[in-house]
Image (cartoon, rainbow, N blue to C red; front, side, top):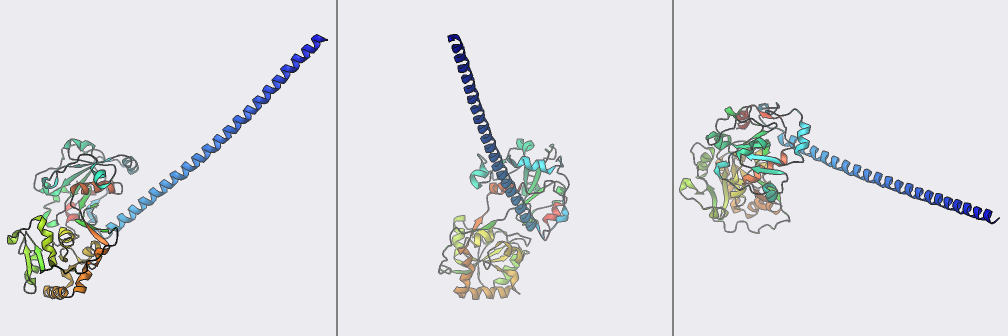
Amino acid sequence: MGSYLTRWWRESSWKSKSEMEQVTEGSNIKKTLHSVKKYIVLSFLCLLLLFIYTGYLSGSQALTTISHTIFWNHSRSGSSGSSNISSGNISGSSNSSDSSSSNSSIRNVTILLWYWPFGHVTSLQGDVCWDLYHIPRCRLVDQHSMFSSADVVVFHNRELIQGIQKLPLDLPRPQGQRWAWLSLESPANNGNLQQYANIFNMTMTYRRDADIVLPYGMLEPQETEAQLVEDVTQNKSSLVCWVVSNYQNHHRRSQVYRELLPVVPVKVYGKWTNTNLPSSDLLPAISRCYFYLAFENSVSKDYITEKLWWNAYQGGAVPVVLGASVSDYKAVAPPNSFIHVDDFASVKDLGRYLVELAKDKKRYSEYFTWRQHWKVKRLAEWRERLCKICVHYESLPQHRVYSNLMAWVNANY
């Protein structure tokens, strides 16, 4: 009997222990399954959030692309010389534009300047484009040894036509590399460009239909509304002044000047009259004049130089302009901020208008009201101009070739 009870107790104990282990094991399995479910749900939510975020970025990128396209089409509308541009492949380039765009969007764009304009070398140490202009992933170099790795090679026209630099036509051109023609001169001073047919893929100049638009100046909004000077005629002692060095009798500006003299006195500075002004005295001298003759040496499309942006606007005189068309000036300058020679039937009428306007302080002051909302930024740094390539690099056609560069440059001249 005793042995039977002992055996029964042992079997009951082992059975209870086994059942308890089974219960514990079942509980652990349930806990594990619950944890797995939580993990799956959390993973799904993370993937969903990632998918939504990625979709947002793609949408934003698409909107940016659309915006670039609209701006590009708008800026090129009405452009001249389009027949002188072909869409053939860049020498050695791939037919696939998608792969090139996706790769260049995540890497540096290397810009090689073949020769510094006018020999004025500037330091390229550090991340110039980012440090100075907050343009990312843009590398400027000027060593010819970087030719094989450059995305864009820039050639300044002045040194080309003078024979100071030559195109590296003897070097094997890397796949997809683009060559940019750079000039801020008017067509009259660009020389014979016929030899450069079917060579360049990009234009960099002041014209609004260029691939990289490089104006001499531009408007920026005032951060806070500026107070207008109550009396803008204060300290004005001369009616009209003009700074000129390259005086040529056949220039239209010279003809207008000669016709203007009998009506209004013109105070002339510069090499022509042996009255050179140091740079520190230029703006103070102009500020003492009611009007400044911002006459360009060439009458050509969009050719509006520092004579307007710096001499007149920064000097505090109302600019009397001659060069580009009235519509070209209106496209870039503040409204009611300049007087165009072509708006008058004769130069004598222009002269009489200037005399009358100088006597009317209220009307004269209206030519300065734009300063309350806008300020002028002068673009004179070659490094900034080169960095602009990276801003527009992705939006430019990858396989463009200027089949007749000279015809494009001389359009509307």
